Length: 145
Image (cartoon, rainbow, N blue to C red; front, side, top):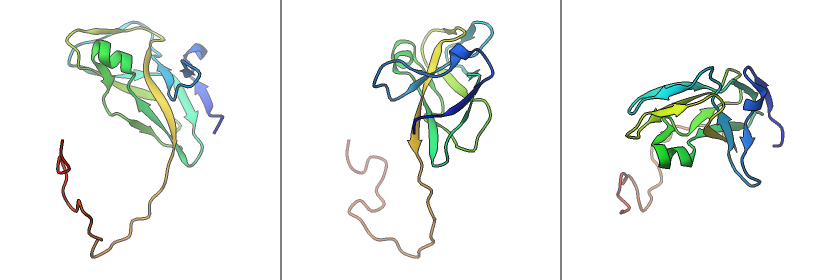
């Protein structure tokens, strides 16, 4: 996949960009009028001004930026957030500040990253018995630390 059709309701310089040659994620930018203070322990829905036409068979995943997470405790709340191929509305990012200090978001700041991935649609078939496995129904730490 090479082309994603986009519409920018905000500033064209807010179009997603890859920050390095081999970056997997394109940076999403805050399309906000004024600086926004994300208080410690609070969450906010941040606009990107971006609308897309994602090809059928793909999704976009919205993920945190590692620098914001490690330096400020700011992350994407529903990570990874999924954008389906039939969605045409604005991409918005739910940020949460898990850090000890308030965090300032300025217009155009890189707030998250977006990765495109293929999607497989499953057919769910009701079956009376499932094949046993070594792990079977063990979960939540059953395989060790």
